[in-house]
Each structure stands twice: as structure tokens, then as C-alpha cells.
Picture 1 (tube, rainbow, N blue to C red):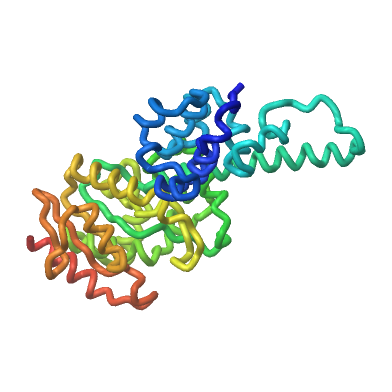
Picture 2 (picture 1 turned 180 degrees about the vertical axis):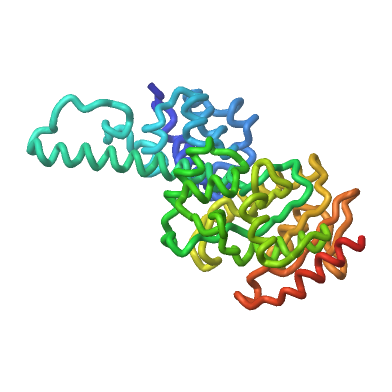
Length: 348
């Protein structure tokens, strides 16, 4: 059992609640009055006379570990951590069902029906909190499709959603991501089959609009056929496959129908940029296409270089290109633009 005695006046439990909610070090320091330097890992372990479980949980939360990881490392019950994140650091004292304490009977004055309803509500809240934690993990660790050691990479702002998906309902994608083991990269065909999106990989597939233009660039670059029948076959059998030749990833880990849809795009952006950069320099793909001019500052954070006039960089043996987003001109975007890009890159 975590001992909170002596911790109440330090601000550390409140800092833990804020860290579990994804607040930054600066935000936590501002809201608790604790200096940022005092919240460093070394200072936490050396300076605070507070229960070690609390300190360890805070350190892990500041390092963006999930509640599941924190619970395993510290022994603090997940239910308590979920409750602290949602209700504050001392909520578990009043909420037996949320702290891992099993209620033995209905409180006085409550009917059996009302008591049963309150227990069901607690279970529902706990399940929602677990889903929220898994969603944060997907936002942090899900990059897209294919394989990191593929020779041809495509990096976009975020995945879109199909017309059958509701704007704010990511549950089917979350369930699919967890079903396949919560991997950094999934198989494009298997993942879409799992979420019920059949259009892109059926026997005669419909061409996905964003992918079509990216594949048009790639096929031109490789000197392969670029007619729609060839592109649809490539999309069905090769695009973003674990056994294929492409790595199709996104800056954000959460899909959205448009940039106007509310998503947490910022919490893990720095971490994801760092991971993409490390994987790129590790595997040295032949071609990397970073599309979307509005994301230029993020693409340059990955390359650690500014794009020159022409928007093409050479990083050793890797060619990095920065065209517009394939949907920048809507459904009737110009095919010649993407063919021209493929030809330019093939000539390098």
C-alpha cells in the first residue's frame, strides 16, 4: 500500500497526478510551485523525503511511461493510478472501488439497486481509463505500416479515416492495434481488414487517393508501370506490407478525417520525431518522401537540415524529398506533378 503520509505538503502527489495526465515538466512546475530542477530524476531520488513508490511513479510518469508500465515497476495498483490521474492525488482515500479496495457491503442509506449502479459506474469508469491509457500508447508508439528496413519511405502528417468511421471513434483502430500486439509498424492489409475497411485490398481494389499519388511518384522513380490497374495491384499486394518494400508512417499516431478533427497531436511529437530520425539514420533507406509543406519544420527536425530550393536533400546515400500533400488540391490533384517528382528523383 502506498503511504501518502508526509507527502501531502510537498506537492509531489499533485505533480504525479499532473504527470499522469501528460502535462509537461514546465506545466507541472508552474502548477505545483516546484522548480523544474527539483523535478529532475536525480533531484527526485535525492531530495524528497516522500514514499519511494510515489517518487518512482513520478519519475516514470515524467518519462512518459504508461500506467501499465508504472504499475509493474512500482507495485502501485493500476486502479489507484487511474483514479489519481482522473480525480487527483487523494481521491483513492474516498473511492474504495477505484483504489483496489473491494467493498464488502452497501454503504448505509443506499438501496441495493443504487449500490449496484454505483459499482457498475466505477467499473465502467475504470474500463474507460484503461482505454484512455491504451489510446495514449497508440498515439506514442503506432507509426504506420511496412518495415523500418524498407528501401522506400513515405512520411505524412497523420492517417485519414474511412467514410464508415465516426470522427471521434478510434476504438476499432485501437482494438486492431492491440490485437496485433501494439507494434510500431503493422501490415497495411491485415490492419485494414481488421477494422473492416475492405476497399483498398479486395480482389479489385479501389485506389486510395493519397496513396495513389505517392505510388505514382514511386513507380515513376523505379521506372515501373504507372497505370491505375498496376497501381491498384501494388496497393493491394505491396503497399505498407510487412513483407514489402515500403515504410508508410505518420508524424501523429492517431488517425483523423481532417486536421480540424480534435486529436492529441503534440504530446509525443518530439519523441516520435526522434524515433523516426534514429530509424532513418539506422536503416538508410534509398528514398524518403516527407509530404505536406505545412509540416516543413517537423521534416527539418527529422533531417536536422534545412531543405534547399527544390526541396530535395541528400543524406549520404538517402534521397529526401518534400513535395506537397497529395490531397493539397483535392481529388483532382495533378498527376503530372507526381510523375515529375518521380522523374526528378530518378535522375539524381
